[in-house]
Length: 186
Length: 136
Image 1 (cartoon, one colour):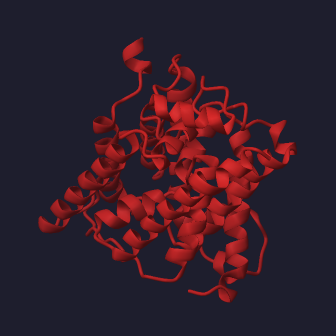
Image 2 (image 1 turned 30 degrees about the vertical axis):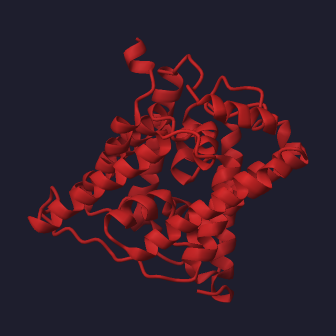
Image 3 (image 1 turned 45 degrees about the vertical axis):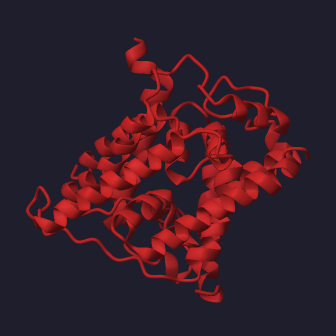
């Protein structure tokens, strides 16, 4: 079983992700990108007068179906064929995260930080709700996310995508090194 | 059921993300702290493979399976690439996830991530309502 449940090295995962780009192009002329699904969900579910959501989302339904597939894939690999071992993190990373107050390393995310009870704490609310809001607002404002800009955009030699990716990274570094240590101690 | 193929493609992608652990808050922290090569190797090799694939498609004028000409829209530069990009980065490091991983994490049996996803939908909604007032 371990061959089915053990994690894959980067040189398998990276190229496999990269191949999603030609796969989607060949399957139906679709540009690899996930964050548009958030916009389609707004257009589909929330009644609004905003022009931004007045378009034929049904024509883009492939993106929502793709997202649904990702949930199924997540279930297959993360539930049915769950890796029983904790992630093999570098020692220095564990040391740094211990300092942040993380205790539970058994799963894919620190469930002692991300859980329903923590939602009612200031720390949990900021990390999950504000963090999620930043992702949704930021990705649409930036016109793409890690898949649409960092992979699809850069691979298609789009310099705005390179700019966006550098900014994703700058924001992440700022959060990790300067803000997260404060947030984690709230 | 013309979308069935995208359901299968999404499923494969979800499996790849989980097996690669790139959806892990721990791995994202490790990346932003420069404490492992895993994420850098993954992202760079993904870009390289995607880039070579696109070059081959363009050079040999390869068509879709249904015979259509393949067209990829250009990305136009706006100030949003910078401001929105920074904001996205903050959220990425806070939640340890970007939109794709959110779906895969929910599927992996973490219903708490539904909260993060709904909040992201709300964020996109607020952007849509404020779009005309923001610098672009």
